[in-house]
Length: 166
Image (cartoon, rainbow, N blue to C red; front, side):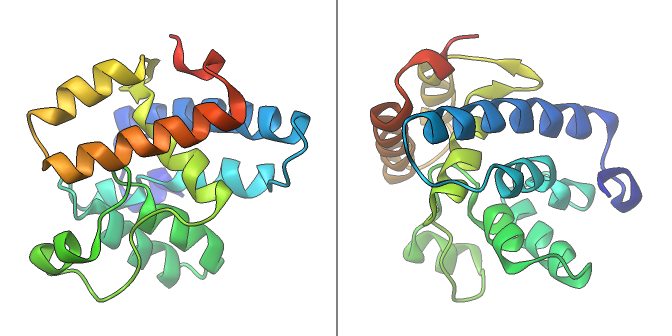
């Protein structure tokens, strides 16, 4: 589906790497007694950047969600795509971006896993969260960086720090 919509080989490779890590995180959650839909995590992670077929801006989240809706994908997958950017986009940022009135911060465990795994993959390589935070600190608002750190704390509380190493 990524190829069909026009995603580059680089984007597909990134999505594969995010999916691999996201599934590992989901399995760790299951081992720790949490209820998580690992198949949804895998599908959502594989498709999280489908909007990059049309744009490489932050808008790829809403563009991707629209592509997924038009392809008849389940709402749970659409939500993962729409909510994976950073640690989420809050209401005021979404309004500033001109996005439709909606929720763009990860809500479910599956959405959080995909968003978090995406922050630990640069290109197709695993990187420590500190690298992502340092890089994004120069590009995005402080509140957005704080949401990434909050997501990191939440996820490491659930699964430990083992997922964060390259």
